[in-house]
Length: 118
Length: 109
Image 1: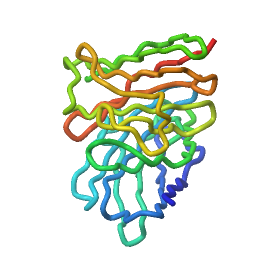
Image 2 (image 1 turned 90 degrees about the vertical axis):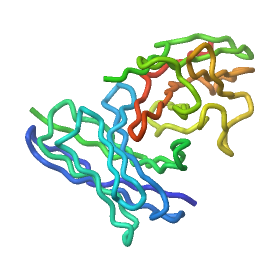
Image 3 (image 1 turned 135 degrees about the vertical axis):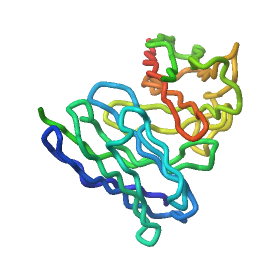
C-alpha cells in the first residue's frame, strides 16, 4: 500500500524558515518524480514544486521560486521542501504527491499545515 | 503567468449529467498537456479521478469520464450521485511544471 506521510509543519514568523519532510512507503521511491502541492485555507490547490526521480531536475511555481528548495534522499525514501523567507501568503496545507509518470499524479499524503504569522 | 480557468460552480440534479471544463490561457488544451482531474471533499486530501485526458484510475467510478472538448479539457459526470458533491480541480502540464485550475464546486440538488 502506497503511503505518503508529511511532517514538519507548524507556526513560523514571517521571514522565517521551515523544512517539510515526506516519508514514502509501498513503492520504489527512487523510480518516481515527486511533487509538493499546497492549499491555503478555504482556497484552491496550488502547484508548488517537482523533483525528478534522480533528484536532478527541479521545477517551481513562480510564487516560491528562489525561496523554496525541493530535495530528496532516495536511501531514506524521503522528500523534503526547504522553505525560507516565508510570507503570510505561504500559509497552507502542504501535500506531498507521487507522480505516475508524465501522465499525472496518483497518490497524495494527508498534508501538513504551515502557518506564517505576520 | 499561465492561468487555468474552470467554472466556479455548477449545480446538477441527482441522476443528471454535468460537464466541467478546463481552459488554458496559452491556447487550446491538447493531449500533450496531460490534463488530470481531482475530486476534493471538505477536510480531505484530493482524490485523483482522471489522468492523461481520459484515463481512469483503478478506483475511479465509471460515471466519471474525461475528454477534450472545444479546445478545453473536460470532465463529465453521468448519473450523478449525492456523494459526487465536491470541489473538482484540473491540472495541466506545461513542460515540467504544472498549473491547477481554480476549481469547480459541484452541488447536487
